[in-house]
Length: 262
Ligand SMILES: [Zn+2]
Image (tube, rainbow, N blue to C red; front, top):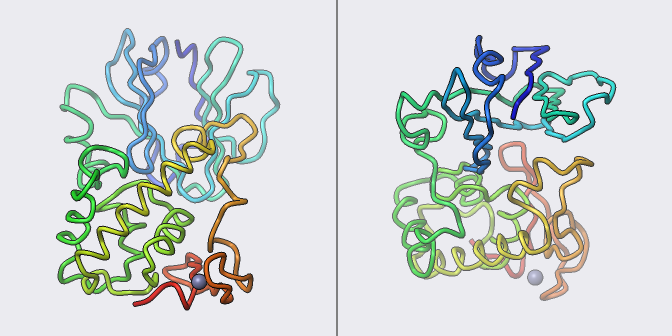
């Protein structure tokens, strides 16, 4: 049960809703799920039934700490559960804490933040041939680079910068290739590479909720096994060529100029 809510700063990416503390106090958290970059906490309380939406933005962290832990700069919101507190810290304040009232309908359909998100890479809608078909059909006529399409989350969600770089390497596709020019067969390989990469990441303890709420704040990615990510200038594990880096929309992309083609 949420015993109390402390909001020290409402000025996040979108303002923290007025009345949120009143709605959440005394509420039970029924489930916690992830959808794209949002964490969804289904809350039922004496004054409310709805979903708390949390987004970490660029620099946000959520940590479970003893409630007595001294505050640091940028500790904006606390949810206290007994002797522990779930603390949201975000120096750049691109993160968000929002509320969806269940009276407005199912959050996945009714929330403008979640509507229009793509499918999860490991769910049935992306399995087998479906993933490749989905990528192919949703990319026709689109000029943007395939890496950007993956990060945008409109076709498939949850494929972040690291996983996008690794998946494109697995499929032999250069990250700057126009999404609309990639063939159906290559998208089948990409979909398979995405599923494999995401499954390995989860097995290694990365991804899913543990990224967001690890008590030490350190994500458990599979760093040691990267093929290209963060390896600029090092030898490709497949062909020995030097891994290169390029900037796409302010994010670094890593690729092998020999194994990955446009
Ligand atoms: Zn290579």
